[in-house]
Image 1: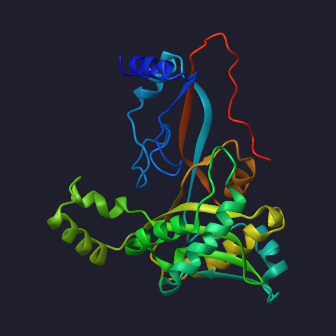
Image 2 (image 1 turned 135 degrees about the horizontal axis):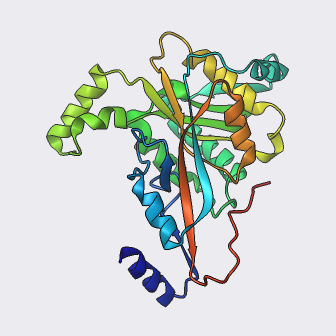
Image 3 (image 1 turned 60 degrees about the vertical axis):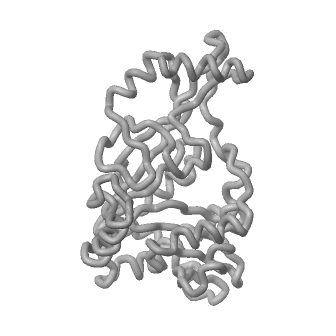
Length: 286
């Protein structure tokens, strides 16, 4: 009944199809249906019982694109090929990679915005991000940021790659049992201080087009690993936010980092109202 009502309402608005499950904003939150890996979700990631898959597919929804999540043990050695490609830039002073400093939050936000707009805006419906929005985003994340897991790479101070991670907030929020009133916020601060978070998750990884395929991905990964793999950094689990199967370049990078494994799969479904119309999957990115 719910799907029927949604379909009727959309048809009345002149739509020709419906996608789901999705949110009404960017794709980085609450997007897609879990079809594999029914384990503890990352913060702001959908979760559903397995029978939802059969429910949607029996209704007539078809796979528009897969959303692949990768996991790895961050203390394990990374692929030796990364060090080979990293060495091309390692001794060249024109290339640097630096992790976030909260006292330079605005600069890092602006540099992230530059990479984001060059690498993603215009692909798959993603819009240009104003610098003001990037700054607000970084300021909103500041209370839970770990400086050592947010990275930007530069060529002569021009940002050319970004590697954005956060501690998995669900590792703290699960102790609040769905409540976030004043007492729960105080409890959150206590938990955050005294219960070390062993898991972090990847939000964004990207290289600007003019530097893609030239080893900059390896450069920023190895530079970050030097810090993240040190004994002072507590993380023993890592899970990346999903990568669309329409982006084979990023899938290949994720699979080549080291002993990565496919930890979850989510799906964005599409239902065409004209059942005789040819169905097309999400186009592959160049």
